[in-house]
Image (cartoon, rainbow, N blue to C red; front, side, top):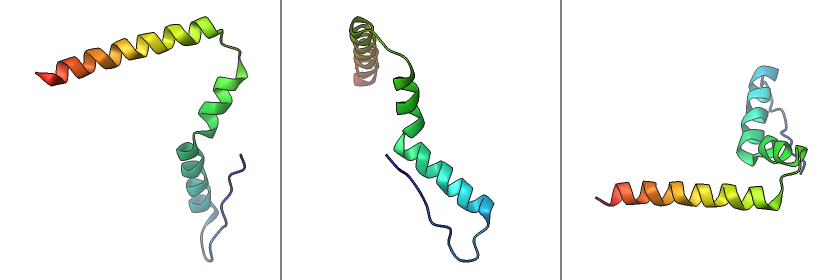
Length: 65
C-alpha cells in the first residue's frame, strides 16, 4: 500500500509533511503495520473479539434507557 502526496505550488515542506501524516493516519497504515509485527494466536484474537462484543453490548444496553 503506497501512499504519497504531491507538493503543491508554493506549499511549504511543513504543510506537505502534515498532509502526508494525515493521509497515513486516515489509511491506518501504522496500525496495520503494528498488528503485523507480532503473531497473535487465533484463540487470543477470538478472546479479544468476544471481549469487544461484550463491551459493545453493554454500551448499547446503557444507551437504550
